[in-house]
Length: 240
Image (cartoon, rainbow, N blue to C red; front, side):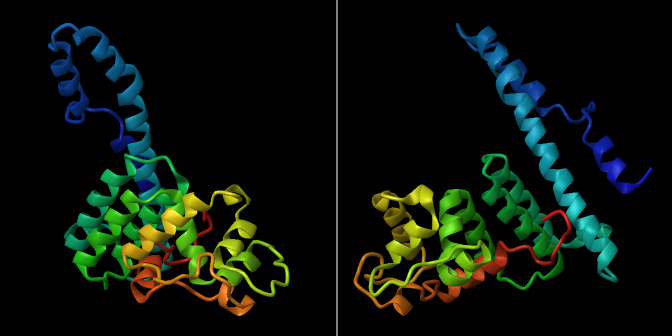
């Protein structure tokens, strides 16, 4: 039996893997709503949570196994001694259980894998970055990546921009992301949050009159660039 089969088998319910059973028993004693509450937990909460957990752990293992096959000297078993990796995995797993958004899950998986092969980031900054992924929406992550190099982001996605004589960063945002068209207050708030968090530069570039060159300038700070590296896939994998 190979390691992939091992992890699937390990994730099967066992006598020691029924934390939800204790919760279920406790809910059954709740006055007035005990029965219906138990059914709600059993049918609505527990199964999806188990599915999310299993999918998350299997994907992490698959990526680490890929590293083991491609990087000489990398051994998954050695990660048991890597406190930074263990902390990152446990922290990221908690966050992953609270979201279904692909962009956030990808960022968390990449952070875990990065901690296994290049644990150079300060652990306090690492925790702060994981907290940001937890707090942010998918649009925060998308717009941060876009803000780092707007023109390259668009080029990579086959977007041809018009020849603007002047405009603001918001014009480029709305042209790039049709879903954000006429949603200025929404993306303005997202940008302002990331400015406050130190990931984007402060300034009046959102809707101010700038040259075309200014409209496409990078807006990420050094910390913003470090955050993007932290949540980026550390190596190219076939599955990504």
